[in-house]
Image 1: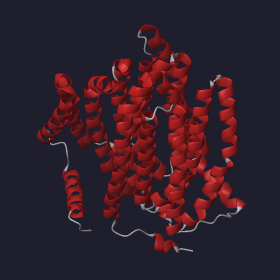
Image 2 (image 1 turned 60 degrees about the vertical axis):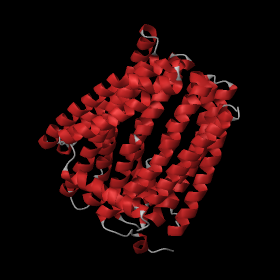
Image 3 (image 1 turned 180 degrees about the vertical axis):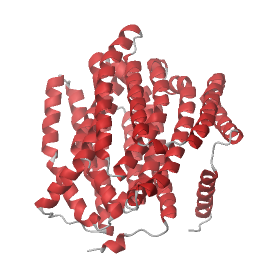
Image 4 (image 1 turned 120 degrees about the horizontal axis):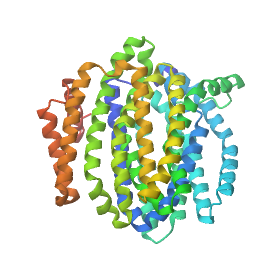
Length: 497
């Protein structure tokens, strides 16, 4: 069996973060590019109603996936980052716990399809989405080890393969005239393929203990409970909007919400990449004291917030052209929800990083309390806002989007109260300049509507670069990181390591 010392990654901590960030960014870029092609093609072909059916199936699988998850990935990543030997002792236990949840998951899906009165096609979509989720949940345990060991090229390849292959397969299915059931069938096959690849990659590094003691299983289960509960309520309030919308509005309106929500979740990959790359470092820093964690965590949190502001401004400015150009007039009701979800990017980015800092400092139970209250708030807001906006504006999707934004803002305020040190006076002044730049970008992009989607993108990039330089928003450290990134890319392009 591989020794724990042999699992240690090469290079300095800073170089590992940069290398892993590049790998993750590359993998997510491939998946995002495939998602962009999918979003430009599939919704227009199948229409809002079929998009609504897919959204319901995906939401059921996502919520059930959070139940099956048990918080194991976050726990394993944290513990493996601190002690690499955990990769061999903890992964086997994690996989076994995941497999034990498969039978209850099947029972829940059967009950949901019965109680919801789902038609034959909708029921089949829920079954297929759940099966793909169960396979991916096992692969997620293995990827937690890769993340904790800072071998994130495996995670990046998994993301690229699962994201790109499933999306392109769906496009191929639509092109040959098959339906939405065939789309999710292809996704299930690809989930099985990616899981098999993760097993092969894992065995290159280590062989986990497949016969853990009952004591180890109980320990992993109990220690993961706070992380599990936090992830569960977070997933519930992110996806419950779609399920409540399906019960309170026509399928077409669910389709109007599905497209902006998929764009929103795709945009979260930026904060996801940064958080995944830094989380092992956060976990290790906390072992040296709270002060070490604070010094390490503040810069990536600040950078993530500013990137969120820029992305929010661009997407909000492009919203009208983006929806109508890509999807046509049938999706006109998606414009308003997209603007609201674009604004939601900023607090969501902050919450994603703040959550990881709390996890790394063994304070997951505190965040659980915050997200639990936020979930109740979200359910209440949806119950009020969806019917109101559906009745008065004929667009319940707008109410669902506003509910999500309000929930994210509530969480961000709580995170600031829990960790006020994340944002100091210096950053507040910098944030004010960034807000001014974001307003300028959004305004000019909106005014450039006559130039078309491509012209607006050019305006967005040029304006962001100009205002960023004039207002001196990037710090010297961030500029140095960009130069290091460019230098690394140039070396690779030249065939040098």
